[in-house]
Length: 108
Figure (cartoon, rainbow, N blue to C red):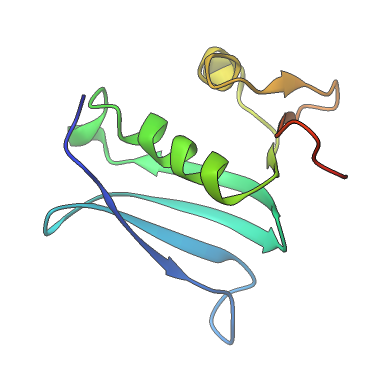
């Protein structure tokens, strides 16, 4: 497993309509995620691990952390090349280009 990550949430405000998550490994920024938090629901618009850090498990660790924090997670407009990743992470195709993860017993 890759090194333990640190996550720094920058909530939306005057500079952005999105909530941003900085993904750090030690003192090195390895990626960013962009989404909108609505209570226990998260819509992810992008998750980017920088190219030099791809393949280290950082995206998986980030999604695992999201699963601990949110009851419903929507991966918005998933690219064709990323479908396998989202399916491996337990998301299901909701037939509109989005993929969804829902904890057992979550209320939509």
